[in-house]
Image 1 (cartoon, rainbow, N blue to C red):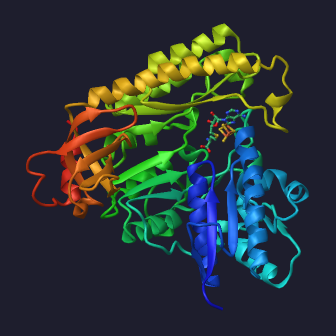
Image 2 (cartoon, rainbow, N blue to C red):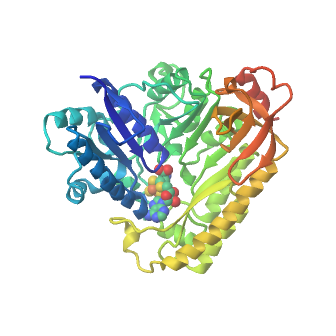
Length: 473
Ligand code: SAH
Ligand code: F3S
């Protein structure tokens, strides 16, 4: 059989981006090549998000559009296999086939290694395939090794699932129990990604800072230490991979920010000084109703400890406004926490009741217009903080890792240590390397810079630049 085409549309978080790439890897041996267009693809998969009601509803409107494409393809004598993967698939299962009977395949996040088998079966029969198991075997052991070329920045899942059960959140139900991949597997995958062109790795997990993976066999039994590695240890080891320039990780839970990881921010130059640390609220009453394991003072203490270890560290965060029972004074506490800690960037959401979660059944649901008004106030404050931070960058010199061509010709686009996009006039041969850049203009979401003198003629090996740009006393 010749090449068939596969189109995967990804919604939601970075882990879904990683998963979509792995699904494409898994289907490549069946002869599938990826295409940007759904129109006449042989297999179309929606990799979905269930976190808020709006995210889940998007899936059904997208399915309506695909239904027409599928019918058109049939009229032309072809067949389009239409699949739903991700957290909506996990949460709704058979319900998807009831609401959208033209769907052929429903597969949950823990069953992706079974996807090739499901497609082979579908080639032979028209009976819809559904797999929303939490299989005893780990998909990571059965998915093929990462195959394609990598971009400069790559994602690597090291941990998946969540046992925290925040009362508003569907993730523990859709992604399942916490699981950490063995450290040796992570190191192998990281080396492959770097060989394929990656210069920056973002380690992913729903509770990534609670990572505790089995130590690689090569490190035991003669070396001291426990049978498992925490994230700090893993990062220290990843940092020794030649060619890898930058390491990030997301998403962290405040009380899992342990001493070893905080020390890594002090000791590992490749670990970027920018951490996503969701607070959700600044009110102790609300945090307790959310079943969070930290109060506002605890969050402040953790942020301070990290700043002590790495003074130039910056934080991003997630906030929910209008959680059931949130009064005006509680919301003011959130604004105060934001002012006290100071965030470079943050995502904020109106509370969205999710079926099956404890908070959805709580009394004192907050009216929509109150949520909307609070969200506006919070976003205004967060926007001001972000603009202030960017303005303070103006005139300074930052290390920029170049990722790709810019939209304007002669321009390339990279990122600062704080992940801010930086536009610079420079040759494309710099893509994949780090250079020192003077920030000449700050915008709300990006910076514009100029290569520092001495940078303009030739490409300097990036490792040297990194240690110079990032060197601290
Ligand atoms: N640690 C997780 C967080 C998952 S959800 C991870 O990275 O995978 C991302 C953010 O969505 C949460 O931090 C929370 O702020 C928000 N969120 C989750 N459930 C929500 C709900 N029911 N309503 C509104 N926002 C929600
Ligand atoms: Fe969700 Fe809370 Fe876990 S936000 S992913 S239940 S830490």
